[in-house]
Length: 111
Image 1 (cartoon, rainbow, N blue to C red):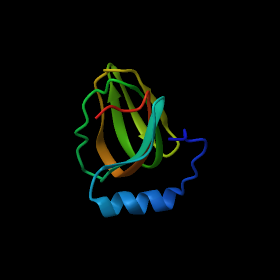
Image 2: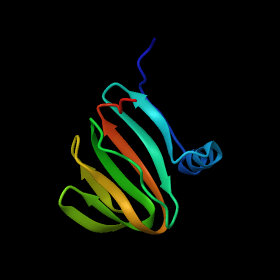
Image 3: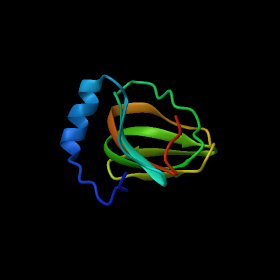
């Protein structure tokens, strides 16, 4: 198998695919050193995620909520970048506007 050299993605297409899947998370990239996906949570919804065994970087595309990671608690909205270290308890809550979030795991998220 030839290693992946490039990948081009269209955000609107990814969001349509995620919506059609009926799932909150759609992974669109997986290579050993990293994986990436779209995470969508509705206003008033709950974020059921648990700590991961990889570092994570979130980029909030749109929406508004609070985010708690360890002892940190902040309001996040479009343009927010959030780093979460391996195994740290974290979640979005008080979601006041539908959230669309790009999520990057390093190394790739394990199932």
